[in-house]
Image (cartoon, rainbow over all chains, first blue to last red; front, side, top):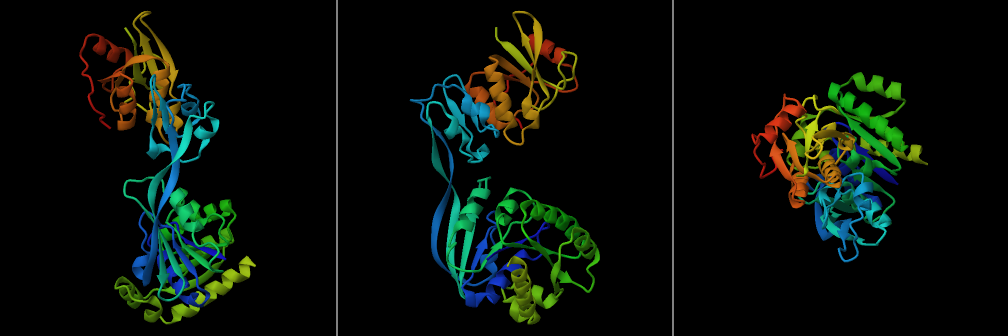
Length: 281
Length: 116
């Protein structure tokens, strides 16, 4: 079972929930995937031992000028305008390329090969609490994160019955690539106007993706507020509420285990897992 | 003499200049042989990505020799520069015809690097 932990607004507690789920699931040897490849941070707040690190690539066009007739078909059909055909050469703008492979597929002369372009690394480590952490880390200067997210999510697929994906915030391509085809999406939010506004966007995204969804309210202070109204209107369940706690925040900021700082968090997370299991079966 | 392309807000010479290269709605292309304009619709205005390279490709296909633009980015500049197309610093708040007149009376400076 793969659980995506996502949110519209950043800073609502995705990484807190994802890393603590991995701790609570420790007996099942879980795989925790940090899919927030532009700024992965799960490894900062959960203890782990590095196992290996490997480069990750995405395909980009490479032109064989011996076969190219400068016909211009590739540039004409590329919807990202990543290729420009000049009178004597073809220019490839790698940062515009979305690695769809259309140019190589349609080239009448078979003059386009797909070359590997390094975009980042996949770091694998062992969680001291049990299980594994997979971290995708995008190279500075690279702009296309979805292929790296895909590679991270494909890592250690067969190794565990529980996978938890710590997603990037928002509803753009990186978030979509992290959530799609999950068994369940936990949307972590906070009881603020921003929290409710961005939660509404996230719900519309998971509905489009057809991924079952539940809400977790973090920093809850006794009132669901706008989140409650939204949840009823969208018919999305509020699965659990994590109370506001200054002790938890202080401990988390020092790299402490949130389950020690807030003992009731263990039960809350176990209930979340039960609620998700009921809905996935 | 090669034809001259000008970034335009509409498809006629009296239209105001558009300050953007990749995302201007039209290019007005003036031919020195006929002293007439023709308009080229710039599909780049709707492009999610690569508007500049897409617009440069269209101008290449239309065998334009020079471009008058207010702002141009690094990728489009690289394409046009490699293809030997000259780029001149245009200005906004005047019409396409007025900018062409400035070019013809040699009041415009050639751009040697991207400025956007």
